[in-house]
Image (cartoon, rainbow, N blue to C red; front, side, top):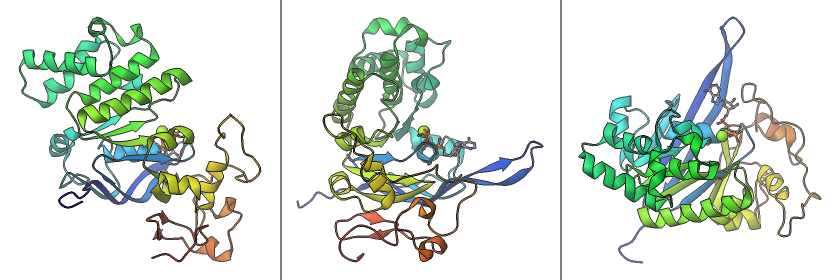
Length: 331
Ligand SMILES: Nc1ncnc2c1ncn2[C@@H]1O[C@H](COP(=O)(O)OP(=O)(O)OP(=O)(O)O)[C@@H](O)[C@H]1O
Ligand SMILES: [Mg+2]
């Protein structure tokens, strides 16, 4: 359509976040590569799902992009600014539009503060709004997440887990961000509440023109919710592309094994072709070559010595595998 181009809102290039591994005496004995060369981009209005086993670096990706901890190296380009290298104070101003919603909703709410105070606080810190304007925005946002005004006067422990999620969402929406990183927004909620929270997220996306990064290890939720999916394995993105394409024909052996474990409609588990065995190696002691090779049925000696680069295929997918299950050569 003339005049309309989808614009990259966030562009991450070769992002690394390594944590020191220390022995009992506090001496550094190595590095844990929680994020190890992640590149991806997301367009305005998109929902990008991030999936992968526990410990593969999903939360670290979200927190590093949001500036909660600094990257070891790499670039994060957001709304025209390079934010990875900004000082914390300069970064804070730019990052108002980029919010990370914690995996544990309780973690973002101070237990000693009433909900009203928790919601008003980002406005006090980041804006020069008057108290009247601040209260009007608190009320409007509380209403948008579907909570009654009397909750403003309650403490976090006085409301349910589902309500805490709503308050957590309200809090990150106070500054009217453009990009929201949702870290496991439905984990720990029962199925009916999960559906309500997912619907709320879709409504909020419309109401506030939000772009979402949606971190979850629930693939059936990610499938419903995301237009694109990035599959992470040990700090790397091994496959990224359109949700429909990835679910119809996963190309990376790791993606195939993840999808094979998703319950089919009706609740039946497909186990015939689920051959993912053993634990992933520690991100502090990565194998040479492809890091999935020790668990991969397609691995050959080349895989064990050469790390695959992500290659783009005809359907737009990027796959980091020497033997992807996808027709046609990379373009
Ligand atoms: N602050 C930290 N210091 C040291 N290591 C860390 C820190 N945060 C995360 N890690 C390590 O980095 C790796 C990735 O952790 P991360 O929390 O990002 O995983 P995840 O994919 O979000 O897992 P989950 O699905 O369980 O939430 C793990 O090995 C973890 O132990
Ligand atoms: Mg996590």
